[in-house]
Image 1 (cartoon, helix red, strand yellow):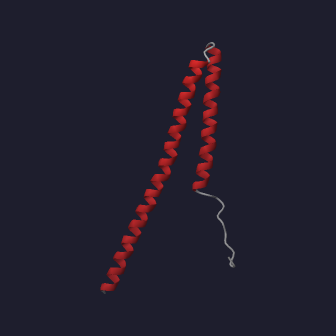
Image 2: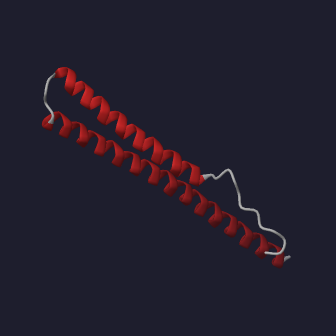
Image 3: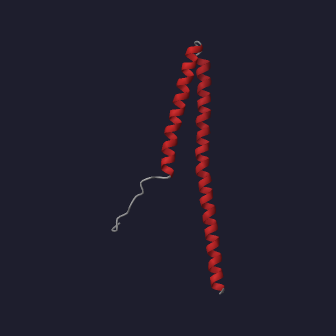
Length: 100
């Protein structure tokens, strides 16, 4: 009987640590996404400020320049986010043949 309780306690320790490892992995995946998103946000704000300071030619032109910078930043972030998220949960899983 002692053997079963030892086995069940070891199994519970394994599943608990495995669950903790999965939870920490999930948190680190989300943190990488959030940190890089914040980096894109900061770079976009800095680019908008530089555009506002360096290319000050009138209200209509300034609005056009800011629109271009914000659109470029959003497009770069969306491209990065799509590639990053596609690698987190791939749709195509490699299939091994019997001989390999």
